[in-house]
Length: 250
Image (cartoon, rainbow, N blue to C red; front, side, top):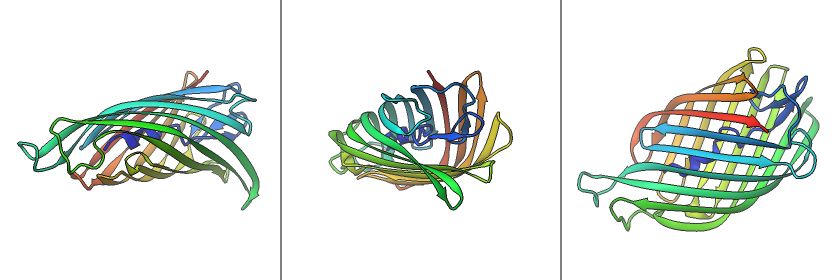
């Protein structure tokens, strides 16, 4: 089921907050430019059972993204997934998924936590999703359209100057969707960062676990992130994944 992928912005960037260095610093992604009130992000996630694309933006109505304060975030995505079921002629059913989110939240920084500054962001709001199956399957509890409430919580901090750690989790009443991810990056310089990540996701139909490597490149006021690794999906078994995302302040 691919719609959880939009939360990677991850998810790529959805879970990323600003960290102070000599200038603003986006989690795992250097952002050495002027402070901004909004950012834009998009990306694609490709794996054995799913393909999903997304785009979105975060806006700080009061102050800038570098400061603590209120946030507004909008995300849209679309994709395709497949799973095993006896209702399909060849045993594999395809489905198309479309999702949208409108969230409001607040970001707060806490100093002196084990000698570090920890940034915490909390969001909540409306979530809509529509899953259209090629072959109708009453046994798929995530089929059809659903609207409901979604909440997410994100943590990020710089550790010992060059390490950046993040943790992100979300849950939605829409199709019982959930997503959790944590990652650790080491900043090689102001352009490159490398590290690893693990993630857990699912909904009323499936569960998926991931583990992989991640890297970030800052270039021309844009931040490119690439992650790749292995996964285990309850609907399609073991496989691999590749995620590419782009972030840009404006």
